[in-house]
Length: 427
Image 1 (spheres, rainbow, N blue to C red):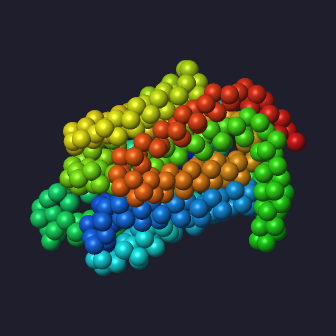
Image 2 (cartoon, rainbow, N blue to C red; image 1 turned 180 degrees about the vertical axis):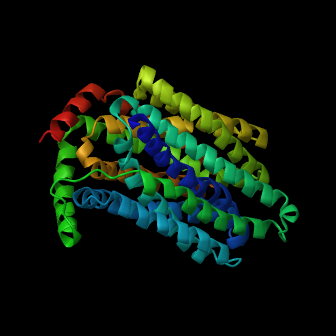
């Protein structure tokens, strides 16, 4: 019976990844960059449009950078992780659905809704990630974390496949054209996100908090706890070093996720072909994420992360020389093989080196640095592309982030971090 309950809450937790990955896939990586260039901002040249999109991604990430650790601390003090998750999830769902109503050429409104959608998506992930510890023991955390990403690839990919079919054959679905199909896809993402988030809220229980605070007491206590945790992170060498390394290499990962389609469009590739390539990435990513979970269990999460970083470096160099859409397909497969692995093993590795009773606030710092990295990458890629008049130069700049992150990760001692985390839990 206990095993059945554990499996139920694990699957329910993973289904949130199935739910919100529809936003990451259909909106962030897929249709928004294309629609932004061709429908909401058709008069802007390719480099200016890339700069605007990069700036939008960066601004949304800055908001999360500012809020993440403080909100995490407040949630831990008040035992309100699921309440915060519900708030940000609702924000993301409403803003995504509202994109349907943005008229042609109205790129400022599209950007505004997109930014709030990203804030909802990224803010929710702080509290979703922090619940990982509550649904998995340390011995299974690599697999459970990977299971979440695998569900995300499969769920996001299934809806994305439907949305792609709608845009390629709008008449078959009774739609007037591709524009209506893309706009309708935003509504479908909102519904998908809402429906498949329900299992987590029903079946994943938030653990009781000692000395629980409420209302403004939770806020004040959260700010005090934030200052204390910030001091702890600075003292905890292993956590601090890992976060610095993660900040750098995840910058490259997030930038490629968010800007890949825009980069392909800038090279003159067909938009439909790029969308199909993203779909390939999703379905390759499903079994690959599970495989990386097993790699993490057998060889350790650091080994899996290093494998992924090496592939990303090779992919970035290849993208600089890329000349046709067939190569873009090959790159999509390569990224699908490692993307979920790098993300899931980073999350599970961090879980191993932090105290369980402070998971939300520590994951606040984790997500803060992840989103702060996403501030630098997209704007750097867009800015260098404008300066040199060539998007290829922008994509090449990402390599230094992967290399620097890997070097710092090499010096992170997992066993030392685990001992320190256990000691903190006892205080």
